[in-house]
Image (cartoon, rainbow, N blue to C red; front, side, top):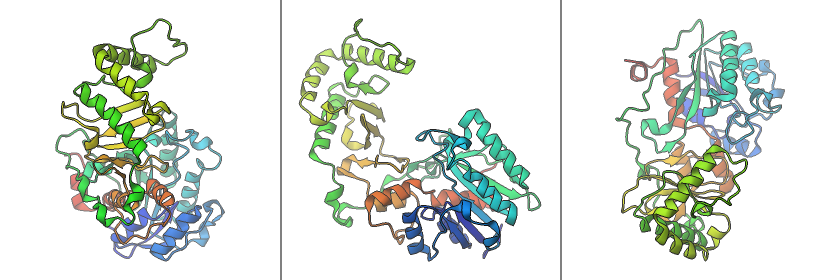
Amino acid sequence: MINKGFKFIDLFCGIGGFHQAMTSLGGECVFASDIDKYCQQTYFENYGIKPVGDITKVKAEEIEPFNVLCAGFPCQAFSHAGKQLGFNDPTRGTLFFDVIRIAKHHMPEYMLLENVKNLAMHDNGNTWEVIYNTIQSAGYNVLRAPVIFSPHFIGLPQNRERVFIMCVRKDVGDIPEFYFDVKKKDLPECNLQSILLEDDQIENVEKYRINQKQIDLINLWDDLIKGVKCDLPGCPIYGEFLHAPSENEDTTGWPTWKLDYLRKNNAYYLKHKTFIDSWLERASKVEMYQNTRRHLEWQTYRGEDESMWNHIMQFRQSGLRVKRATYFPALVAIVQTSILAMRKRYVVPRECARMQSFPDTFKMNPDDHIAYKQFGNSVNVEVVKLFAKFMFGDEEVRRKYTRK
């Protein structure tokens, strides 16, 4: 286990998820870098360190010696949400090599890197091969396969699968295989209430309430769920597909998945034709439904007593996505903030901070949009701590996460 008082650097630091984890393990941050001015401001307000901007302009020799390099290097080049250009991205994909440039100059004992899940599969695995071979060539042991892990695997209420890359300098030691069976039935139960604030604890709570048009749309879909006793088609419901099969429907060029959804929705309509006809008549008078919000993704139970108002949901460009109220979908740095249907409000920034395991003493940006984005881009503090302990050789953690 690394000695307390170790020094670390925080590259692409964001608002300091790595910082929170490493300082809790006894580390001292000696350098931080992030190009975003709002992240620089939040980082300084919380840690008293002003992150340097463009890492490509930082000379490695200007950085104080350190023991641990932390980097959540930019993910847009590999993310499903981006163009997935990988190392061909002229501005982001190559920043991994700046991490290696700094590591090769200082040769710290450890590196802990984080990225999106898609990094493991990007370009049919070729991107990972480049990363793996580059780390090996730089003088570090690294696991042959990237580790994918989520906070909800350890009872934290967020499904946020990310790749974690643990690197140990070859003269320091090896890394045992990290093993965790995500399919096992004894995963710790997530407690949604553990991160929620009571409404009377939220300043100006009314600004987080959903509006009447949104309520009308939720009630409309809720009527459908209850009207068919939660008998759903096994795929997203597409309002425009709720009709009898038609030979006149032009499906030229449609992908297989869309044709399958059309077929299932047509069959679903015929099964519940009487009720759906009356429901569609009501839908024609609901403004948000008419303005393209005609899709419903039901990702929860199918009991007869189900209600939309028991769950977590997100308004998406085309409609609603509904999830069980066990853990939240991953925070993202775009406007798809989760809604607590039972409270008729959005998750507030402080709850997002808790979702990412930041303490309540953390000073957030006062602009909600910026705060949501920052937490959506951050790493989960407790998950980082877990991988840091494993990498450092903590006996208890290694016993728990190695194959029996």
